[in-house]
Length: 76
Image 1 (tube, rainbow, N blue to C red):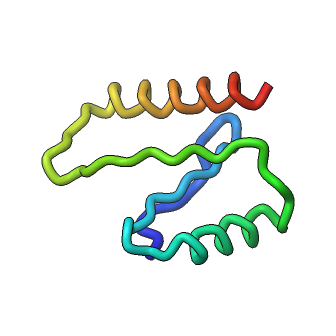
Image 2: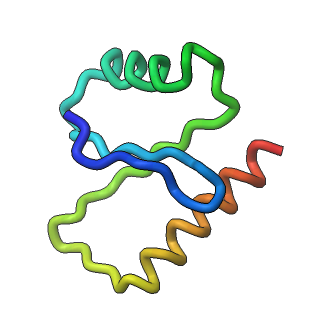
Image 3: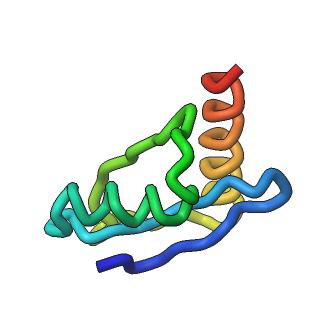
Protein backbone atom coordinates (compact mmCIF):
# COMPACT_ATOMS: atom_id res chain seq x y z
CA UNK A 1 0.00 0.00 0.00
CA UNK A 2 1.00 3.62 -0.46
CA UNK A 3 1.89 5.07 2.94
CA UNK A 4 2.56 8.69 1.95
CA UNK A 5 2.41 10.58 -1.34
CA UNK A 6 2.53 14.15 -2.53
CA UNK A 7 4.25 16.82 -4.55
CA UNK A 8 7.41 18.62 -3.46
CA UNK A 9 7.51 22.37 -3.88
CA UNK A 10 8.60 24.53 -5.67
CA UNK A 11 9.49 22.25 -8.60
CA UNK A 12 6.52 19.87 -8.52
CA UNK A 13 8.46 16.59 -8.12
CA UNK A 14 6.13 13.80 -7.02
CA UNK A 15 6.97 11.25 -4.36
CA UNK A 16 5.57 8.01 -2.94
CA UNK A 17 6.40 6.04 0.16
CA UNK A 18 5.40 2.43 -0.49
CA UNK A 19 5.50 -0.74 1.57
CA UNK A 20 8.29 -3.03 0.31
CA UNK A 21 5.79 -5.88 0.03
CA UNK A 22 3.77 -4.18 -2.71
CA UNK A 23 4.25 -6.12 -5.97
CA UNK A 24 6.41 -4.29 -8.52
CA UNK A 25 3.71 -4.63 -11.20
CA UNK A 26 1.29 -2.69 -8.95
CA UNK A 27 3.85 0.08 -8.40
CA UNK A 28 4.54 0.24 -12.14
CA UNK A 29 0.81 0.48 -12.89
CA UNK A 30 0.37 3.25 -10.31
CA UNK A 31 3.21 5.28 -11.83
CA UNK A 32 1.90 4.77 -15.36
CA UNK A 33 -1.57 5.92 -14.40
CA UNK A 34 -0.25 8.97 -12.55
CA UNK A 35 1.96 9.95 -15.50
CA UNK A 36 -0.90 9.49 -17.96
CA UNK A 37 1.07 6.65 -19.60
CA UNK A 38 3.92 8.99 -20.64
CA UNK A 39 7.45 7.65 -20.37
CA UNK A 40 9.34 9.30 -17.53
CA UNK A 41 12.94 10.43 -17.93
CA UNK A 42 13.92 9.56 -14.38
CA UNK A 43 12.52 7.54 -11.48
CA UNK A 44 14.51 7.44 -8.23
CA UNK A 45 14.15 4.66 -5.70
CA UNK A 46 15.51 5.23 -2.20
CA UNK A 47 15.57 2.34 0.24
CA UNK A 48 15.91 2.41 3.98
CA UNK A 49 14.26 1.72 7.25
CA UNK A 50 12.80 4.40 9.46
CA UNK A 51 12.36 2.31 12.60
CA UNK A 52 15.35 3.81 14.41
CA UNK A 53 15.97 6.75 12.11
CA UNK A 54 15.31 10.31 13.21
CA UNK A 55 16.06 13.52 11.40
CA UNK A 56 15.67 17.17 12.34
CA UNK A 57 13.29 19.20 10.23
CA UNK A 58 16.22 21.21 8.85
CA UNK A 59 18.12 18.05 7.88
CA UNK A 60 14.99 16.54 6.30
CA UNK A 61 14.48 19.66 4.15
CA UNK A 62 18.15 19.59 3.10
CA UNK A 63 17.92 15.88 2.26
CA UNK A 64 14.84 16.45 0.09
CA UNK A 65 16.47 19.47 -1.59
CA UNK A 66 19.54 17.39 -2.44
CA UNK A 67 17.38 14.63 -3.92
CA UNK A 68 15.59 17.21 -6.07
CA UNK A 69 18.91 18.74 -7.17
CA UNK A 70 20.25 15.30 -8.07
CA UNK A 71 17.13 14.43 -10.05
CA UNK A 72 17.23 17.76 -11.87
CA UNK A 73 20.89 17.31 -12.85
CA UNK A 74 20.35 13.69 -13.94
CA UNK A 75 17.48 14.59 -16.25
CA UNK A 76 19.43 17.25 -18.19
